[in-house]
Image (cartoon, rainbow, N blue to C red; front, side):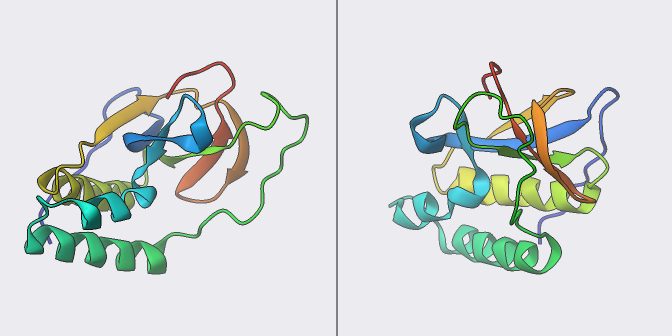
Length: 139
C-alpha cells in the first residue's frame, strides 16, 4: 500500500475522482470505479500498478456499499444519472482513492480530483458518500 495521507481542506465538503470517460454520453466524467478496464487495456500498465488497482478494488468491495436505490423525489435534469461523491470526512476511503489514482496514473489513465460544496440534488446518502444529480453543473 502506498502511504497517501488525506486531510480535508477547509471548505471541502465532497470529493470525486474522475477520468476521461463520460457518463452515459453525458457531459460529466466517469468516476474511478469505471476506470479499471482502461488500466487493464493500457499497454503502459506496469504490473505493480495493476496489482494495486486490484487490491484497492477488493478493499472497496469490503468497505463501501454501492448505492442500490435512489430517492429521486422530484426529478431534476430528466433522466440524468447520479454521480457519487465522497464526504470529506471519509478519510480512509479518500486515501484509498488517492492510491488508486497513483496506480491509474502509472497505467496512463489520467485522474483528476474534483471538490465541491454542492454536488447537486442528493438522491442517496450513507456514512461515506452521496449520490447526486448534478443538474446544470458540469463535473
